[in-house]
Image 1 (cartoon, rainbow, N blue to C red):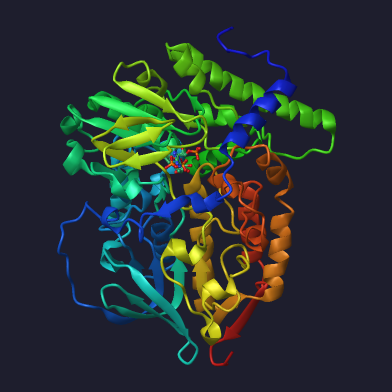
Image 2: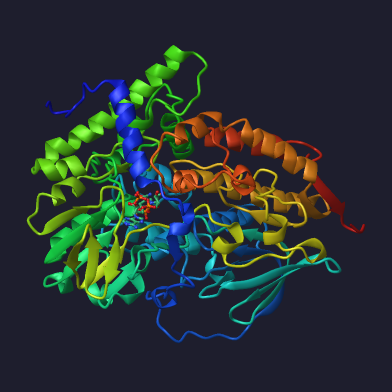
Length: 598
Ligand code: NDP
């Protein structure tokens, strides 16, 4: 055994190992194995970050744009509208402030795994210098508030307000949007900028409801129980036995903090994460201040190119992400030699990450269980310097379930392989809904032309132009990865989408367009474009362990065949949007002009 463990394993054997590990994890229920936090566990779906008892009078008003969601997507849409001279918009947000994912995720150790100089948008405009290369969640949340103040968004926001309905009124050509606070907003446009990684899910483990200790999801961290705060140690856990279910990107960040605070920590693992080196550090102020105008856009693009295997001339970010993703192993080259080289490169990258476990984790049995046996694009690779060392602590116990997951939860603990682990607290780092029905994720079912609901229109899968416009839903813009782009730096995608939507809205105003929606032909053509991008990813995905990336390997039915993403580079997706905006006639849409009827 070398530092890199079994690096010399022949490819055939590796393939076989991946298959065996994948098969252990296949579950016939697919996405059905999870329970919803909202609905199934309403008592856990409470916003503990606001003072209870907030009330306000209902608002009845006309506005040009209702933006649903106050995370980066909603804020950037509002900011882009502002820059284009439009200020007549309302932002409606369930939470008590801006921030979206960075409002909710306050678990200890939460940070962004993408470099802050490329992740935080508009740094040149705000003049803000991130304190570290990888910013912590409180800093990012603070930055969202700074954006809100800088662009004067707060007066436009309705916080602690949930959209309950949106219905197109053909007579007035307005959306009638209703909310949980009794508001009635009549608007020309609706932009749904939410529902991406926002709806927590819990594993449907037998007995989970009956747990007698404290339990919560990582996105609703209960500091009243753990003590401490996102920046202070959780001093109430010193005498507690804590269990955490899940070892994904969230858990990798939370576990080192829990390991320091808890009397005993039990980590229930179904599939190990690949965890590379982080190397965080303070921002070099002289370097940051010396950047020339336009540096951030260049850096953002450079990063996206580097992590999609486009290998820019200079690797500006030069971190774990760019190193791991420098070669795009998801391509489907026709040349078998090229395909074999890509496969080898992927195995080697993962071998390096597996070797890192051997180098750090002292107990060989624990180290063996922490090794990920799947390709580098199967799950989000993690980067953390304290995660693997946490397993060297005597109070941290890895309970590996060999791919099965936790068997049962009892009133006093969790059961794996016939052994009950007694717990005072059970934390679910079990992720978020991703590929479930769109209207379920955004929390309301828009009703478009002729009273047809989105759930009905999309009953056989999504139909959109660019993932943004939909037939039957005039002036309704969607920002979501469904039939749209995505990327490692998700805010890069959101920035491109927000820019597109704001431009579209303002253009309609300028050109006297009363309504715009996708045409059925436009939707069909876009679907063909999407299909043209998926071959490599689809083939690669079949070799992967189940996860939300591949809808837990659920059946490929009519819905799933349409509910896909633009699988090539985000920059190519953005190129489609830009070329479309540059046209005179906005192809693939149905348009009515002011003064004419539909
Ligand atoms: P994930 O969906 O990635 O992980 C959920 C975890 O719960 C997995 O380890 C899963 O195991 C485990 N699990 C599910 N059911 C069971 C069960 N029955 N028994 C035991 N374990 C179970 O969620 P995360 O919240 O970790 O991450 C979601 C996404 O959020 C990331 O992919 C990323 O996009 C984003 N994120 C981004 C961060 C950033 O820094 N930018 C930080 C954190 C999250 P299995 O793998 O076997 O399914």
